[in-house]
Amino acid sequence: MSVHGRTSRRGGFTLVELLAVVVIMGIIAASVIPTISHAGEARRGVARDEVVRMLEYARSRAGATGEPCGVGFDTGDPVVTLVTLTDGGVVSIIDPVTGVSKDADLGALFDGVSVSAFENGDGKTAAGVVWFDYLAAPHVRDSDGVFDAWFDRDATVTLSSGATIVVYKHSGVIEAP
Image (tube, rainbow, N blue to C red; front, side):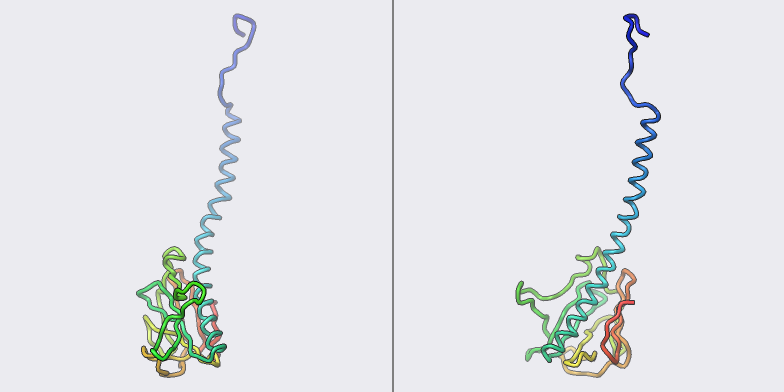
């Protein structure tokens, strides 16, 4: 008690109050950190889905227009390109709304994801195009767009995130197991 009959209390926190704050912050941290790590995994999964979407678009467009359409891959470049044939040869597909080519820069869109391995349906690796015809059948064309051969094996695209996309040789079905 003080000289004047009042008790004085110093400003501050008690040990119980500090422990309560530490426990609450620990609970928050424990719930946020796994969410942050799952965001990276989800982003890499979206990169796989983008490649699948582009392959399905090419397959559908070839069936709808009757013109060969494909998706170009190169292990040295993170850009995946939608292509078609014109009288001038192989050209990128241009979006009629934006006026730009319908490419996907996987590295920029998905935090450094790129094509780490590519094997076309003819056994060639590193770079090439998965082409589809009006029946959605996958095939190989040369660099000028001239028909080369039907797939003699399934085409596979492997991303640096570990995801693999398969285009089956007989049906053209696209799967990302």
